[in-house]
Length: 355
Image 1: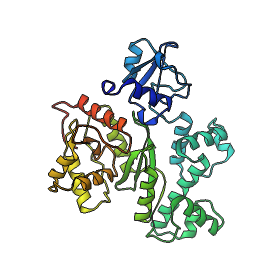
Image 2: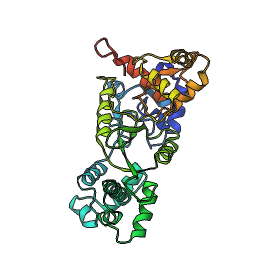
Image 3: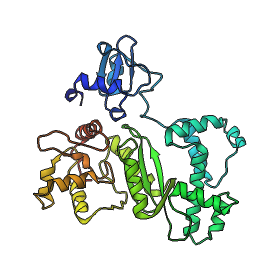
């Protein structure tokens, strides 16, 4: 990877703290003896003092120690202990209405919870817990209970207040059993956190949390399905998280989590072809067009590739330009290069297989 990225590119990514390079390289500072992530909050060192490594192991073998500010030995944006404990507590009792005494029992300050949840999820802990309760209310309505029962369970005395809160978070008013609910979860990977959205049966979206256009994807999903989206975990989310862990540790390239693919017939044909590209190999857009029987539809194939809802599970990162250049990728070209290098490194006769 670093053989193909010049120091100028790496240093530029370091100075702008580019999250697209998380997990792609580490920088060591000769004057301090420490090594850091590319997004370390410390002031960027002088270029002459930098040494770049493709993984933390190489940096340590070269005699550098991990930075205490950016903690390069943990996953990028790894979930803090406070956030992890509170998310687990919410999952144990989604209907719970949190008060200061509840934080005291966990030895967690309410302001710490608020600050860390906003940094991680873009909402405070109270907002997160309320969204989770409303997600349970969605389930109650779909199970046939009256709206008033769901309102009371969610802790709202006012029907109008319940509907307003429901609409703000879920994107639709609580009207009937026809209302759909999807749940969103965040989990860490070596390339940064990923977002997964699913119901109880299948996955609807999987992408890197810093992917450009992710918010638009979520809005389109909500609008097309007329569904609300709330924090929570479902069996498909647990399944894809486990499969991604196996993918990133190099032990598997297989994904069997059920997917709901919201594409046209042509797009689904392209996505099927993507899943036939062996791990560690690449195809050009023109080759992919030949594979689907539409050799002149190179641009349409590229658009279908870009419309893929499932990063890694449907491997659009394995498609490159005809001249060998990587081309675009929603998660960033650096992540695309990392994924391809990772697959080439870990493929072997006994592991090699189709996704």
